[in-house]
Image (tube, rainbow, N blue to C red; front, side, top):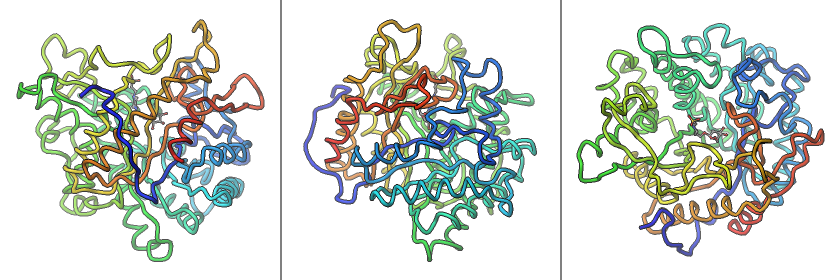
Length: 477
Ligand code: GBH
């Protein structure tokens, strides 16, 4: 089977969720307006040298002022749902729920009401990486106290918005937060691994994230579920990974370990038995926090669906002396890399370095999740494709004729359809990353994933649909 597979015809469920996804820091702007507190991304992006093009999310798409335009765009797309995240520090500037920021609450109320008035259902992520700076100052994810703080924030959000929001995601991609924020230190809070081991802090925070998620899930169940009747879970990011040579047991093991140490790190505790995967416990040893029986019981089963972010695929072999330097994770005895024959994201210039277009990987990953975690309902909470945007990129335009993104969407969705129709995977929804070009974290504005182009030179932040917006609408229809 080629990477693009053959196309099949058919339909997803009648009530399939069709949407686009975004995150607060990437689109809202108004970083210091109307009583908003600072987040770790405000701090980090204002740090010299942190962001590739020296930019930040101070204004970005200015959604705080232009949210009505965003709703119009979603309507035009014919989206049934929209996934966005709340800014914790906009709602609770001091992370104290007895002192909320009325303007922040009003903003999200207007936004949610606007979506519903247009028949678009909100899917709300509580936490997409923008921890309040005041929580960070008290130790952030490295402190046990964060668990109570997170629960307090979540409680506040359910009480304010849960009458209208029926789909919640607690934390976006904890594995990326842990690895990038606390291992490599290339995302906020920019902490490079501590103590004797470079990746130590990243394991420590994986525990407080799991506990924050689990306590929040249980609090929703005991305090809100009966009245609000929503669904709540976590969103995990994973590449698909296969052995370079499937007949080589070392390659098979290496591929499995890569999946364990990315997807399994959080999926195994939540969707299986409350604890980290055995392979991680074996290899990471004393650096991986030990979860007590009580904690395992708390964590196990805290999901109503499986939120999956998926973009790309890798091949794996066991690590050797020569490849040790390329290990993206010092504890992982796997060397992973893309097949050189795979198409890359981007046109004349490569889009995101890491993004190789392998639609068949999505079908395999969906099947893997379904098989490994007891056939949960799966929602693809992100999937998308980038281009490079830079003044140094000759021939760079708005890239409105984004043929590659059109093909990406069509082919990945067709593989998802196969997983659903031919393999029986319980797939409930698909959210495209992303509605419009936005602040792409450490890459600033150099990488663009939008269905809509955004002109960041223009004070009006004019949004212009790309061809892919029409392609996506056609598929939805
Ligand atoms: C998603 O993460 C995020 O949820 C979203 O906010 C983001 O805008 C979107 O991806 C697009 O990037 O820099 O070469 O070391 C997806 C998982 C993890 C994929 C980090 C890219 C960076 C690889 N991402 N990874 S590299």
